Image 1 (cartoon, rainbow, N blue to C red):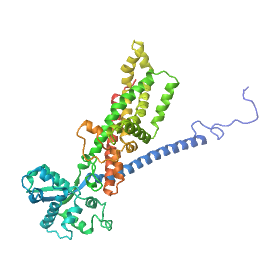
Image 2 (image 1 turned 180 degrees about the vertical axis):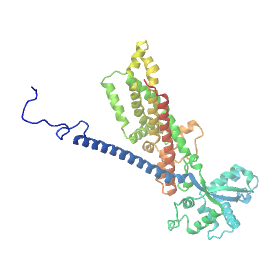
Image 3 (image 1 turned 90 degrees about the vertical axis):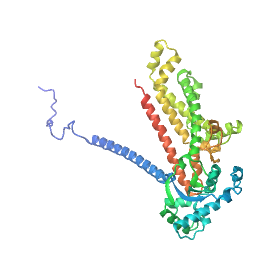
Image 4 (image 1 turned 30 degrees about the horizontal axis):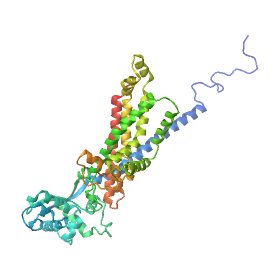
Length: 455
């Protein structure tokens, strides 16, 4: 007997097409595998595209900005004629200061004419056009400052290395060509011919320009003398204000909301508004700073202190959100264990929870500072782009209260000026800003890895 009903059908032999093996790939599995392969391909393509765009961005920034770190200099031997600079011959600074920068123009013309004659160069360019068009507009002021600082050198011949004019510098960097100067009133073909001859004699040379990193901004007439140094100090003082205010306020608010505040409708409203503030456009904080800190409190325009206060308001939501996330990441068992051995609520928070959350807090703070460092819109409304800081601050109080600029505001200011040399410096400033941002984010990662504890 058998339990199989006799339906008249013959049994299907093993191995025939009527029976499928679990090791065989059916159509449904093939479709699923193809979909998975496509998804992986899409992911690789997205990552590759992102890396490609990043490489294009970095290549563009470096390619256009690296020229700002090189500058053209002209070497001249200038005779400091006594009859022009100190007619009385008594070396009285009061009399020497009476000679304006225009009075030093003839000295530069004579030096240029003498240099061309010594080298035996043939040119149609007059000595006046040499000094006025090939040298930076700040050469006369530089010469005057030297004489005032060294009055005993009057009557001697001194060697100087003056900045070349922006057109000459652009010619050596390929930014200016003989075709593009057809309608240029600041330089002509004959002057470029003279530049080629002076380059062959090593009178004109291009080399690394440290003054771009350490110097101050310059007027529209002297793009070759503009630097980022003073605006870097302005950003430093602003970041000090942001750090001193946002870190304690943000951490204290986060600890209270996460550990001590009762869970009711009021704290819910506060949490929602903090999240909303993190998404508010930065220019709104600039308007708020203009209305409160400048129009109402009458703090000085363009001061890093005001910029720091505005950026503190903008950074606080980011720090609060990241700090609360770090506190939530600490397991509840840590709190329960501390309370179980007799610790108070405050002791359990400050002695156990806060140290474990410190890496996340530090990371969030540094990321918030990096975000504030790159902001431009709030600084536009408090006047930090309308002031040219020609001298670095001489004290902490001066650095906080005196008008100054900041790195992103300085870059914005250069980018909108007409001379292409300023545009090149804007790209060079972006490189410095990116170095600061990458450094701060690297520090955040290192601190997180260094102090992170696992449980």
